[in-house]
Length: 303
Image (tube, rainbow, N blue to C red; front, side, top):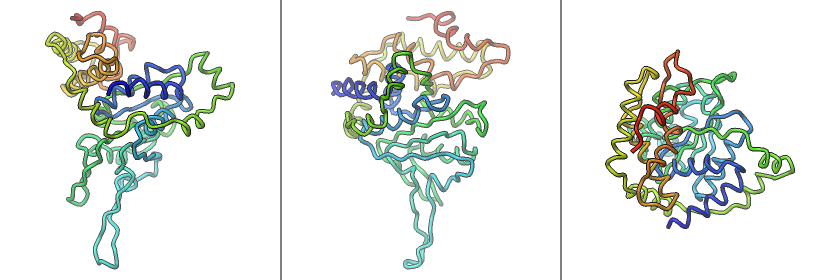
């Protein structure tokens, strides 16, 4: 089963050049059965990464372009009166798919952003007192532009917490950028890549993640990280138990990608920034570079 993962990573790394760790983190997020938020400036490959993952997983794909005039019904769907049957019938929106790309999610108003909340957390949507389950697997990858850009509405904490990870792709290195400037056509690569892990195999891998062993000292380590974030004067808001669960799940997925059956401390450290950056709130006088280095290297002992 795990031979599927190297084939997936090989194709993904051939599309998003020079971003091996980012791709591995994104795959960890999906294998941990979580949703992913990618925040970065336009033009660095956020949408391309999401589209590549949809193709490589062979899932039914829907792209929703978030704009200021987008309404919740445009995402969830709405009931339309059927004259022939003399009743209202529900017409599902694009959220009813296996793989959702919520592009530029912070361009939409908070009311529209919240339309994703129930679907992402509860894996269902309730409309007019009737509940509609989401598909399995159900994956949301959202992209957003930096908050200082014009026309953005910051995601509230409740919405951010629905995302298991937040990643930043960043600019390519010199070698990768030269390949792009020399005419490496990413769109053609997307058209030629093939499914590496199908839906059934993805579900099996997600179940396999659950079996990866996490020793008691590592559970204590995660608990110490949570406790430090809640008591340290650096932070105005600490990490919730849900963040701790997300950290362990992501570390298990990272270990599985490395073809291991148990979690190491290095796995927790590898995924920690992407799990905690969007959940921790710094005090106004705390320097931002201390956000993770203090937790990882200074205050919390590594088992």
